[in-house]
Length: 112
Length: 115
Image (cartoon, rainbow over all chains, first blue to last red; front, side):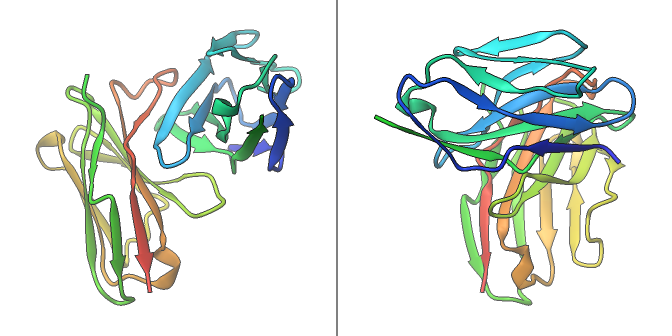
Protein backbone atom coordinates (compact mmCIF):
# COMPACT_ATOMS: atom_id res chain seq x y z
CA UNK A 1 0.00 0.00 0.00
CA UNK A 2 0.88 3.65 -0.15
CA UNK A 3 3.32 4.91 2.48
CA UNK A 4 5.59 7.80 3.44
CA UNK A 5 8.99 7.52 5.12
CA UNK A 6 10.62 10.46 6.88
CA UNK A 7 14.00 10.85 8.47
CA UNK A 8 14.11 10.19 12.19
CA UNK A 9 14.26 13.13 14.53
CA UNK A 10 14.89 15.11 16.48
CA UNK A 11 16.86 17.41 14.24
CA UNK A 12 18.70 20.05 16.25
CA UNK A 13 20.16 23.07 14.45
CA UNK A 14 21.56 26.44 15.32
CA UNK A 15 19.81 29.54 14.07
CA UNK A 16 20.64 30.40 10.43
CA UNK A 17 21.73 26.84 9.64
CA UNK A 18 20.59 25.03 6.49
CA UNK A 19 17.77 22.54 6.93
CA UNK A 20 16.99 19.35 5.05
CA UNK A 21 14.32 16.88 6.15
CA UNK A 22 14.22 13.82 3.93
CA UNK A 23 10.96 12.30 2.74
CA UNK A 24 10.42 9.40 0.36
CA UNK A 25 7.18 7.79 -0.67
CA UNK A 26 5.78 4.57 -2.08
CA UNK A 27 2.69 4.83 -4.24
CA UNK A 28 1.41 3.67 -7.58
CA UNK A 29 0.60 6.34 -10.09
CA UNK A 30 1.08 10.03 -9.41
CA UNK A 31 0.17 11.17 -5.92
CA UNK A 32 0.07 14.75 -4.73
CA UNK A 33 2.65 15.51 -2.03
CA UNK A 34 2.38 17.78 0.99
CA UNK A 35 4.35 19.10 3.93
CA UNK A 36 2.40 19.96 7.07
CA UNK A 37 3.79 21.66 10.19
CA UNK A 38 2.61 21.36 13.77
CA UNK A 39 3.81 24.11 16.11
CA UNK A 40 3.74 23.42 19.86
CA UNK A 41 0.18 23.42 21.15
CA UNK A 42 -1.32 24.04 17.72
CA UNK A 43 -3.03 22.04 14.99
CA UNK A 44 -1.58 20.82 11.72
CA UNK A 45 -1.06 23.53 9.12
CA UNK A 46 -0.36 23.11 5.44
CA UNK A 47 3.16 24.35 4.70
CA UNK A 48 3.46 23.58 0.99
CA UNK A 49 2.39 21.14 -1.69
CA UNK A 50 3.22 19.82 -5.17
CA UNK A 51 0.80 18.02 -7.42
CA UNK A 52 2.97 16.70 -10.26
CA UNK A 53 6.52 15.64 -11.02
CA UNK A 54 9.16 18.40 -10.98
CA UNK A 55 6.77 20.84 -9.30
CA UNK A 56 8.37 22.91 -6.54
CA UNK A 57 6.24 23.90 -3.56
CA UNK A 58 7.39 26.88 -1.50
CA UNK A 59 6.21 28.89 1.49
CA UNK A 60 7.81 30.91 4.32
CA UNK A 61 11.29 30.22 2.93
CA UNK A 62 10.72 26.45 2.82
CA UNK A 63 10.93 24.54 -0.47
CA UNK A 64 10.38 20.99 -1.66
CA UNK A 65 10.60 19.53 -5.16
CA UNK A 66 8.53 16.55 -6.33
CA UNK A 67 11.10 14.06 -7.69
CA UNK A 68 9.39 11.11 -9.34
CA UNK A 69 12.63 9.40 -10.36
CA UNK A 70 13.74 9.15 -6.71
CA UNK A 71 10.19 9.14 -5.21
CA UNK A 72 11.25 11.95 -2.90
CA UNK A 73 9.94 15.26 -1.60
CA UNK A 74 12.69 16.60 0.68
CA UNK A 75 12.00 19.76 2.67
CA UNK A 76 14.68 22.47 2.66
CA UNK A 77 15.23 25.92 4.12
CA UNK A 78 18.32 28.00 3.67
CA UNK A 79 18.37 29.69 7.08
CA UNK A 80 16.24 28.43 9.95
CA UNK A 81 14.92 30.54 12.81
CA UNK A 82 14.00 29.64 16.37
CA UNK A 83 10.37 30.16 15.37
CA UNK A 84 10.67 27.23 12.90
CA UNK A 85 10.88 24.79 15.81
CA UNK A 86 8.00 22.38 15.25
CA UNK A 87 7.11 18.89 14.04
CA UNK A 88 7.10 18.51 10.25
CA UNK A 89 5.00 15.87 8.49
CA UNK A 90 5.36 14.69 4.92
CA UNK A 91 2.16 13.31 3.36
CA UNK A 92 0.75 12.00 0.11
CA UNK A 93 -2.75 11.93 -1.37
CA UNK A 94 -3.86 9.60 -4.13
CA UNK A 95 -6.61 7.40 -5.32
CA UNK A 96 -10.35 7.19 -5.37
CA UNK A 97 -10.82 8.22 -1.74
CA UNK A 98 -8.05 10.87 -1.75
CA UNK A 99 -7.12 10.23 1.84
CA UNK A 100 -4.01 11.90 3.20
CA UNK A 101 -1.31 9.42 4.30
CA UNK A 102 1.28 10.81 6.71
CA UNK A 103 4.82 9.99 7.63
CA UNK A 104 5.76 9.71 11.29
CA UNK A 105 6.89 13.31 11.59
CA UNK A 106 10.27 14.93 12.27
CA UNK A 107 10.83 17.16 15.26
CA UNK A 108 12.96 20.21 14.48
CA UNK A 109 14.54 22.15 17.34
CA UNK A 110 16.34 25.38 16.45
CA UNK A 111 18.62 26.85 19.10
CA UNK A 112 19.57 30.55 19.27
CA UNK B 1 -12.71 32.29 6.96
CA UNK B 2 -13.33 30.46 10.21
CA UNK B 3 -11.30 27.31 10.63
CA UNK B 4 -12.30 23.79 11.62
CA UNK B 5 -13.76 23.84 15.12
CA UNK B 6 -13.41 20.92 17.52
CA UNK B 7 -14.54 20.31 21.07
CA UNK B 8 -13.69 19.52 23.72
CA UNK B 9 -10.00 20.40 23.65
CA UNK B 10 -9.10 17.89 26.34
CA UNK B 11 -10.86 14.88 27.83
CA UNK B 12 -9.84 12.44 30.55
CA UNK B 13 -11.91 9.29 31.09
CA UNK B 14 -11.50 5.89 32.67
CA UNK B 15 -11.28 2.76 30.57
CA UNK B 16 -14.63 1.24 29.61
CA UNK B 17 -16.30 4.65 29.72
CA UNK B 18 -17.69 6.32 26.62
CA UNK B 19 -16.69 9.64 25.05
CA UNK B 20 -17.80 11.79 22.13
CA UNK B 21 -16.00 14.42 20.10
CA UNK B 22 -17.58 17.09 17.95
CA UNK B 23 -16.36 18.76 14.76
CA UNK B 24 -17.66 21.68 12.72
CA UNK B 25 -15.85 21.90 9.36
CA UNK B 26 -15.14 25.00 7.32
CA UNK B 27 -18.35 26.26 5.78
CA UNK B 28 -18.99 24.74 2.38
CA UNK B 29 -16.45 21.95 2.72
CA UNK B 30 -18.01 18.74 1.49
CA UNK B 31 -15.32 16.33 2.65
CA UNK B 32 -14.70 15.67 6.35
CA UNK B 33 -12.06 13.44 7.91
CA UNK B 34 -11.34 12.08 11.39
CA UNK B 35 -7.74 11.17 12.17
CA UNK B 36 -6.16 9.57 15.23
CA UNK B 37 -2.67 10.78 16.21
CA UNK B 38 -0.90 8.66 18.81
CA UNK B 39 2.06 10.34 20.51
CA UNK B 40 5.19 10.11 18.36
CA UNK B 41 3.32 8.90 15.27
CA UNK B 42 1.80 10.47 12.21
CA UNK B 43 -1.96 10.91 12.01
CA UNK B 44 -3.92 7.86 10.86
CA UNK B 45 -7.23 8.17 9.01
CA UNK B 46 -10.19 6.71 10.87
CA UNK B 47 -13.06 7.76 8.63
CA UNK B 48 -13.77 10.01 5.66
CA UNK B 49 -17.16 11.51 4.74
CA UNK B 50 -18.23 13.04 1.45
CA UNK B 51 -21.24 15.17 2.41
CA UNK B 52 -23.08 12.78 4.76
CA UNK B 53 -21.93 9.55 3.12
CA UNK B 54 -18.98 7.42 4.26
CA UNK B 55 -16.19 7.15 1.67
CA UNK B 56 -13.59 5.23 3.69
CA UNK B 57 -13.86 3.69 7.15
CA UNK B 58 -11.51 0.79 6.58
CA UNK B 59 -9.33 1.66 9.61
CA UNK B 60 -12.13 2.50 12.01
CA UNK B 61 -12.39 -0.07 14.87
CA UNK B 62 -16.09 -0.54 14.36
CA UNK B 63 -16.60 -2.64 17.48
CA UNK B 64 -16.00 0.47 19.62
CA UNK B 65 -15.80 3.52 17.37
CA UNK B 66 -18.67 5.14 15.51
CA UNK B 67 -19.04 8.38 13.60
CA UNK B 68 -21.83 10.25 11.92
CA UNK B 69 -22.24 13.37 9.87
CA UNK B 70 -25.84 14.39 9.91
CA UNK B 71 -27.00 16.84 7.23
CA UNK B 72 -23.53 16.82 5.74
CA UNK B 73 -22.14 19.48 8.08
CA UNK B 74 -21.18 18.77 11.73
CA UNK B 75 -19.78 15.42 12.73
CA UNK B 76 -19.40 13.44 15.93
CA UNK B 77 -16.97 10.64 16.72
CA UNK B 78 -17.79 8.30 19.59
CA UNK B 79 -15.79 5.69 21.45
CA UNK B 80 -17.64 3.12 23.56
CA UNK B 81 -16.11 1.51 25.53
CA UNK B 82 -12.73 3.21 25.63
CA UNK B 83 -9.46 1.32 26.04
CA UNK B 84 -6.10 2.53 27.29
CA UNK B 85 -4.68 2.37 23.75
CA UNK B 86 -7.27 4.93 22.59
CA UNK B 87 -5.27 7.66 24.31
CA UNK B 88 -4.39 9.99 21.45
CA UNK B 89 -5.22 13.29 19.80
CA UNK B 90 -8.31 13.08 17.58
CA UNK B 91 -8.08 15.44 14.64
CA UNK B 92 -10.89 16.59 12.42
CA UNK B 93 -10.14 17.98 8.97
CA UNK B 94 -12.12 19.20 6.01
CA UNK B 95 -11.48 20.02 2.37
CA UNK B 96 -13.48 21.87 -0.23
CA UNK B 97 -13.40 18.92 -2.59
CA UNK B 98 -12.12 15.40 -2.54
CA UNK B 99 -9.65 16.05 -5.34
CA UNK B 100 -6.10 14.76 -5.12
CA UNK B 101 -4.51 18.20 -5.03
CA UNK B 102 -6.92 19.70 -2.52
CA UNK B 103 -5.28 20.23 0.90
CA UNK B 104 -6.91 19.29 4.18
CA UNK B 105 -7.58 21.95 6.81
CA UNK B 106 -7.21 20.66 10.35
CA UNK B 107 -8.75 21.63 13.66
CA UNK B 108 -6.69 21.87 16.85
CA UNK B 109 -7.75 18.39 17.92
CA UNK B 110 -9.10 16.77 21.07
CA UNK B 111 -6.53 15.22 23.36
CA UNK B 112 -8.00 12.09 24.95
CA UNK B 113 -6.42 10.43 27.96
CA UNK B 114 -7.80 7.06 29.04
CA UNK B 115 -6.78 5.96 32.53
